Image (tube, rainbow, N blue to C red; front, top):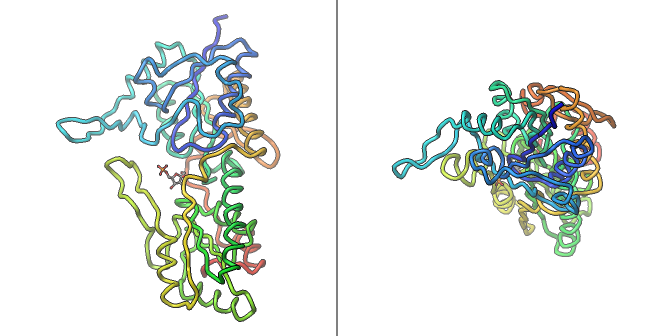
Length: 362
Ligand code: F6P
């Protein structure tokens, strides 16, 4: 039997735990005497021979506690809609033929694609072109279906909760309202879970458009009960009833999707106009995507890597590794990218937050 050679790439925004997956894949593959080719910078790497390199055990030594990805990534790398410069203008062209033939040339018989919704959708398109693919779900936003949780989310939660703890003490000293803007484009998982863990007074998420007057009222009422400060956590994708998301940069140009950011300032401005208290804003931004993965994410990402190799061994292509309850398993990639996993405004998590006295903007 020919020696198996598998490929691995990381696509989309980075997150803590990517290196754990890479290490898990390489370790499990080497035990089977397979070769692993690491492709740098997502699918783009296939367009450059020097970006496709063999990964040995030495290459993955010591990377488990490291944030980011040793392979690099990009969130612009779609081979079906690849940006090239033609006569001073950006044009989108289909370079998927080139990618497929590079995969064949490299002798890759299965490809592990580590990514979120966008990257896994591209992977499905490549499957249709005959590339055997196994998916590994990643995103700090935790908005992928078919897995209870994605790795990276737990570390981001720790970062956001730590920020809330720190904001609490300064909010209390100065009797201020502190607004913490966290990531979460369409789903408010980070805001809601960190908000609960960090004892926030108000949590604003994209799934529940907020009413600023009610938010102000809740802060005033809290003041009457003796709470002379308030801490608000808002997902970057939160928006007011009848309003829209705050966009920092439109899609196109350098960004494939629109860049969000600024809702914290918007809330601060709106509250500043009606409250007598000082309002300050902290935008946590990419701190949530960086740093060393938490214990939970190290374990989950390592197991996801091993499971990906086991799926390849079993010939289960088109599947994505996942966590259901405490079991690592697999689900069709197609089901995972059907739509985003959003918070149910009438679900238990929101209800429990409200039972805790947290104001959800409604
Ligand atoms: O999808 C993960 C995410 O962190 C979003 O929450 C955020 O909107 C986006 O990435 C930011 O991406 P970029 O690094 O391109 O600014």
